[in-house]
Length: 83
Image (cartoon, rainbow, N blue to C red; front, top):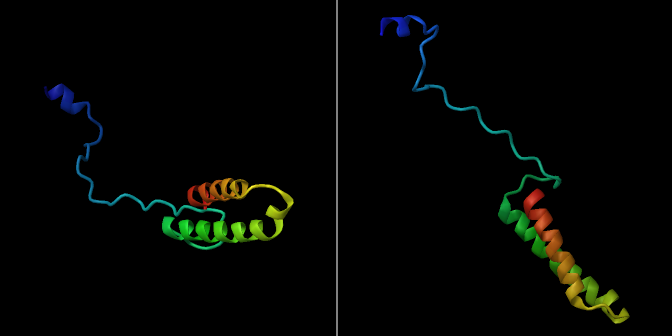
């Protein structure tokens, strides 16, 4: 038993008094600091603006509004996850 104790070079601290270092802030592509709700709100505003633009300029040419909704959904997923 004493041989095992003598072979230990440094004592092992089980309880650390120092708090862990803070995590680095997540950096996204949006130029402002946001949380998930801010990014959701930005996505909804973009969806409404894209829908209005689509109704005015693109839908008279023939494409359905569902294409606009698919684009807005893809943008929302990108903004919420990576923004």
